[in-house]
Image (tube, rainbow, N blue to C red; front, top):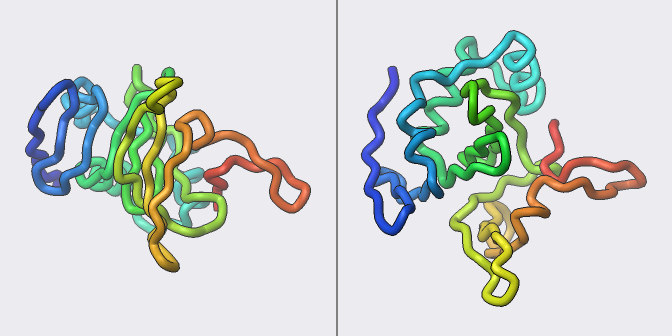
Length: 160
């Protein structure tokens, strides 16, 4: 069953009334949630990446979208941040490409987005959902970049 999402628009940002999550310029995305689909390859990839054991991957993803912390568009894809998972969706076809967790296996909550006061670079504000739960900021461009871990090059959000 798909729940309706109550969104409030203010200054170009949509806010989910239920969760308080923000959606940067995503009204067209939310208006097309019903078009979201994936492929057999996408299903296999998502199940493997996040060790998911459900039959209906699309419904699982739509539920995360409805409760998302943040939704942003970067280039040709939408990125949905919810429950420590990032769901990547093609912006034109609304096809779920993949979903994955952070490379360290820890979970983080994206709590907002901001711009650097001097460079105007897009920044991600996030909170660790482990340990002391520290709050951090990182450039959006670094969010999915490649890093070196134990001599191997991996995405910052490593697929499990």
